[in-house]
Image 1: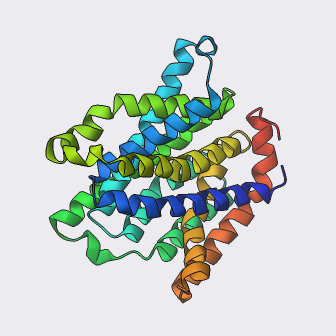
Image 2: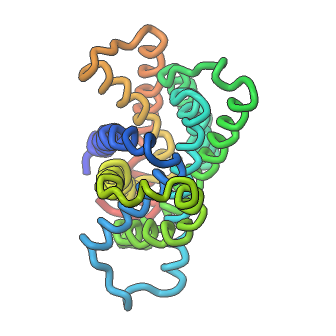
Length: 294
């Protein structure tokens, strides 16, 4: 796999996520953010299980526990993020949530150049995301910040546990089993409030179809690509590469919607690109250290 292929996978995954987000908008009008996040995880798990049909005898208890933990953390991460953007601006939530990957990147290296790259990526994400300080004021803002910080911690967990799943082999199969298990574990907290307050919403077939579409575009495609990349690079570099997600959103907005980035966003994009380029030379050594091949 060439060095350019890895960033390209993140861009493809990001585009898929943003197309899937358009489906999520429709669901937000019908269900709570937590229920939408649960449908996303359950839909992704179902699609992967049907497509891969994992054999039960291939799964030891230890492997199943790691996959289930990974899936539960992933679904919880989406629940926390969806709740955050229900209370604060999307850009602000994205910037706060990115503290998770940055923490993993910093913890994974002690070299000055890598720490500077992580700082540049964080500043770049803040510039690109369009942080609105006014959005975090008041009780509603505090709730949103709390959920965004929880999503950040869970995103860090997603990277760390996801790397274990990828290195164990069969990471994509582990992703499917994990997401299905996570959906089962979180079914009650994810669905109970909506079943009590708006049970009729689940009787519409459109909700389930949109849930499957959201799971496919926003989880299956990007998370499968994540597993491919995690099997080839270290956690620190993977965490930095995640900065390409908000940058891709800006690019999509510029091309598809004519939303031209201003000079602050342009600086943010440049900082992220510099951080990725500076750390790109470590992709091969890290892959060798983890025992993964191309």
